[in-house]
Length: 147
Image (cartoon, rainbow, N blue to C red; front, side, top):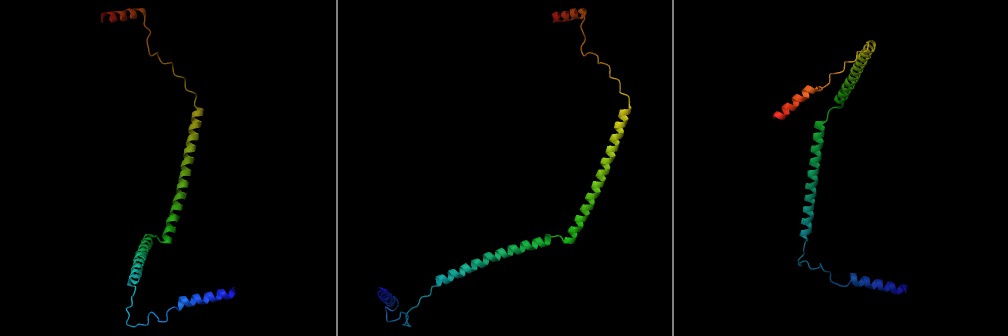
């Protein structure tokens, strides 16, 4: 069985590779074709690639330059941070002093209020309406009848 397989393999190889005794390219006068479409397409693809990535590189370069131009030196940032910390500490101190002063004034006012005698209650206000006497009732009736 192995010998038959080897024989078929050798015969198939001879048929595929050695079928014609004349080589196809032996005629020097025969026309030869060059696949220019493949070369042109490859050239266009390379140009498109270069243009696309060149634009991307230019954009990245512009962004990096803008970042460099907009960046502030580290020493200047540290100086600003130190100034802000000092201002923050000063505001805390001033705020605490203001709160202490208000608290002291509040305590003083409470002490004064506690030492004063209580104020007398105001008298009851007069009634907002007046009771009618019988004579007023008769006047009201006359005015009402004359209308």
